[in-house]
Image 1 (cartoon, rainbow, N blue to C red):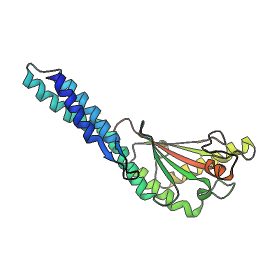
Image 2 (spheres, helix red, strand yellow):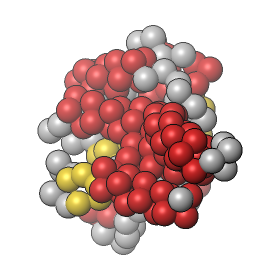
Image 3 (tube, one colour):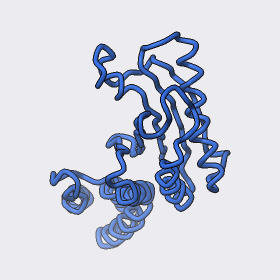
Image 4 (tube, one colour):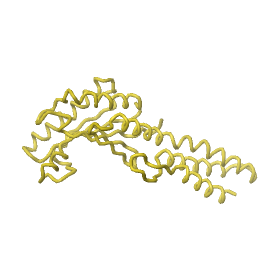
Length: 222
């Protein structure tokens, strides 16, 4: 019975976990569904391994699957809902929202040209509403940790670029703290030119490299 029940549960959770990404139109397995599936199968395995007869083992397996599914889906759901809310709040403002399918981490990419005046580290006043929206979501989903990194292109001295990138990361972090996000959740670092995402030989590439990223890391549990 155990050997038949576990594969059946796997098939069910695989189908349940498949969703259509509203932003790409593609079928994919959500972190919620995947987490719930893993939890369900683990719970079923534990339940099926106990009990004195076939009927009791089946009942325990089904109960274990239900409990495990809820527990396993917790963090995945937490990050899925947070990503959805960030996309809604940041639609059309020029900030990229990316989610790592493997880890569930969410990264917000803020281009330097819309976030800061040229060569400066103070946040533009017209960008405040964007950071206000980010702060609102971070306060609502307050179990995550936040890594803020500053990045530059390859123009100028290395030491100056490191300082500018660190100062910009600090400015974003301090602004979020001023809007009620706990400073204990935030870590800031400046990488200068060391982590480019585009070719520095073109103006378009350099513009992409001048950025601040906010990485929102999943909690261990919710």
